[in-house]
Every structure is written in C-alpha cells, then in structure tokens.
Image 1 (cartoon, rainbow, N blue to C red):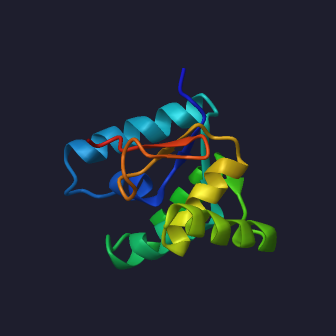
Image 2: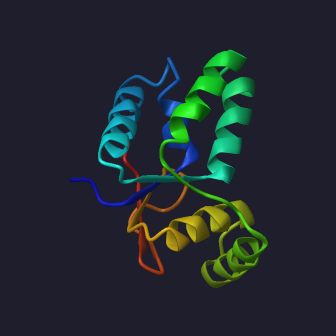
Length: 137
C-alpha cells in the first residue's frame, strides 16, 4: 500500500511527456497506484501549473488538458486559502524555500501527507514530517 503522498506537478507532467521515456512510465504507474489506493493528494496550485505547462511546454491539446484535470480532481485536492498562503510564508522562511515551493510543502503538511513526490526539492529532506522523495532518482 502506498504512503499518503502529495504529488507535485512534475510527476503529472511526465505522464504526458512523450519524450520522457522511463520517467513517463513511472509517472503513469505512480498516478495510477495512488488513484486506485486513494492515497494521492494534489493542490489547486499543482493543477494550475499542470494546465499552464501542459498547454505551453508540452503543447497538449486543450481537451486533453481538460480531461487530465478532471481525472486529477479524483485525488484529494487542497486549496490555497489565505491562511495557507500565510503559513507558506512561514514555511519558506523557516526552511529557506522559494514561495511556490513552500506553498507545495505547506499543502502537503496540511493534508497529512508523509511524503512529497517531486524532483524539484532535495530528496531525503524532511520539512515538519513531510519527506521529499524523488521518484525518478
């Protein structure tokens, strides 16, 4: 069984990146297993980043991006409230993280995740009980 995991944008994007090779296969498997086990969490920020990068960087058709967002909405979705944004400022200051990374860490913490699946933050780092895991390493 999967640990309760926060899934960062890069995992979602690799699932649709035709040139990602093994990363694509792994991303698809991670998404599928976390969806089946109801152990995956994303945030509105992650969904927004996926939409923007999917359209702009990957050149995905609008209807595919829309379909993916509807699918990803099957995960638990954490919204960035004003309180969450203020907490992210504190997380960023405490751990010396850029604001948007801190907002991801804050969302993972707030949702009770034990790990954050990302290649954007230092693998193995632990921020208030949330361990950074690079699933592609």
